[in-house]
Length: 424
Image (cartoon, rainbow, N blue to C red):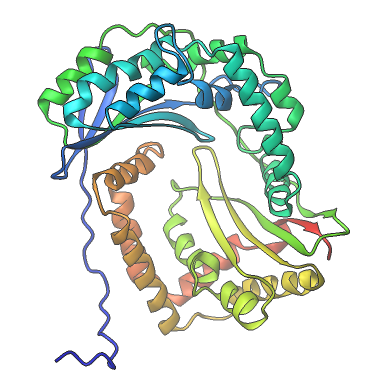
């Protein structure tokens, strides 16, 4: 009989297998990457478009198009699109990111021939009705006004602007920016960004030759958008350093966000930095959680992250603490960083982090969709699957000395941007 009083023997993950996609092209040159896996008759098709033609005076063009692209075409109203997608048991989703925007459909294979024409109409015939735009502007302005009452939102907004300035990464959106949105701007951006020359398709699920032929027959020929565009490209050199304090006298909690520009996924140190970040604040058992939450009781949660984007990377620490202990929390955060830079991490702590990170990686590859997402990460970083091989190798082999070196190389608090909203 199993003795449940004994802790199970733990074992390190030895092997993680990735499913590489099949690369094909539609007749009009659109690249299609397919993860053909899974037993269910279910498929996800995602059309991804690079963000283009950034204009500081019109920061909401790409965001507005992403939100409103499925709100009416020359042949379908917003209601008809929603009703038809729902009728076939499908799910339509649009996503906006700082580097790319996408539209994806989840559907049963048997309904693919009925669902794809709806998607074609959205990508070729969207008209952005004025009444839908007016409603969007009204809702977004109200939502932003509510968010601007929250300390953590203000801290995140000011931190991004201090780090990235006037770009899609750091644009400081105000309610009046929504009011200034014009339908013609959305139509123009739609024509320049949502076109075959700027599109890559990622497919995951059951997708054989017959499904590809269907996709090619609908999207590989007639596509009306072809306006010229320039893919966004940014460079960042001198983020605003020091402390930004935004006082809110009635605040019960103070929001803290601190960090700096850093490396992205293309840098050789990135996997090691991820291990160091995990140890510092990347999971529930991290040093920041153990100190600021468990020991001091200053917060319900605190975390750190290293974020990779196309043209930059950044590191940050974020938390909300009691307003009366904000100064103490800042001191303890810097203390934990200094310890990483001055003392070697124990073998036991590194092993715990190794197990967590490898287990998280393995757990994140649960289906064809997640394998496709992992491929997108390296595709848009112009990397191959050797990136993941190196990542796994680094997690398994990194030493305490290497972690200390990385901490000294990338965690200079003198270079940090520190945003505090509330009281200190």
